[in-house]
Figure 1 (spheres, rainbow, N blue to C red):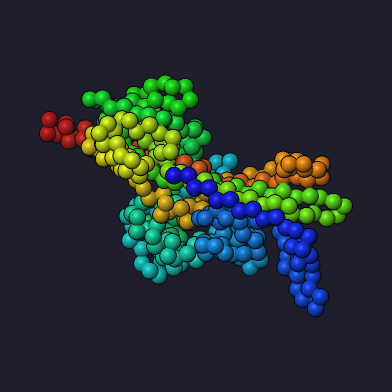
Figure 2: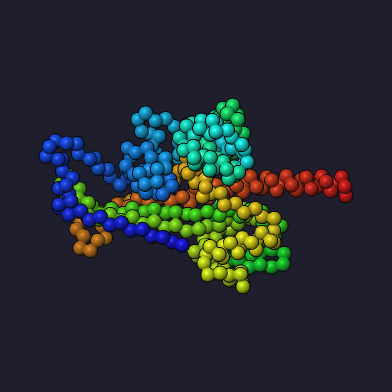
Length: 361
């Protein structure tokens, strides 16, 4: 379901005058431009750059580590260049409470968020390092805390190749086919090829601010916030280099036949049961519980733009500033990480089966 939240703020002359310094000489509240605001990695709402935690949900702000007195253990968060190496905690590890607190302090995380993430039993990326040597050094430090981890070059994840968006699927005796959204092509994969299904939620946040600029002054005219939230599912088959991506709100569930329900929640649950019954695929829904941690490794992608205001009867000196952020790149990277790990497990099982066949065949 897509939820949209709109907030409009029109400041009258009286509103503007209230921002003037108080007559008694008190301190005036500082105002920040939209592009200076920090976006919360959890609720995606804007916060003042002087804050260390979100004023709405209390989450750690990704950029708050740059504030005076704060240090960061993470490398630069440039998600466009990738000679980076991930340091990943092994799935299902047991960590003492003391070590959890140390890890949380080391990586600027909340202990409660870290406990939830570890409780999922999923592999947990903790940091990105610019080289294998630095990654191995961190792995050694984590080992002293009783935390098993390993290095994985991000280049191996293949996230530079976009997923194949599927608008419908159909079932056959030996497999399933997907119909692509853009070219209406049919792609086929066998049930044996189906190895992993990853689910999550994509959240996009957009802030639009209209301003009127004069000589040495800026007057805020209007402010709008838009939030879009939708469920997404990645289906991985070994015969494809990229996952089949399903946007739940834009998917045809007719393949379910009599199992088709009234809500998207019911339909995605039924689809999960059908796929599980026909294949050995693992369904992973850990992303939503790991999202507070993943923001420390893969920050949200943000963009800013400025153009002439489209308000009715807008003058030439009225501009519209737009700041947008979303977690799609973050979800894609985590999804590919899970598939890389799952693929290695499947290859190990295949090799073990071949060896057993030679011994007992």
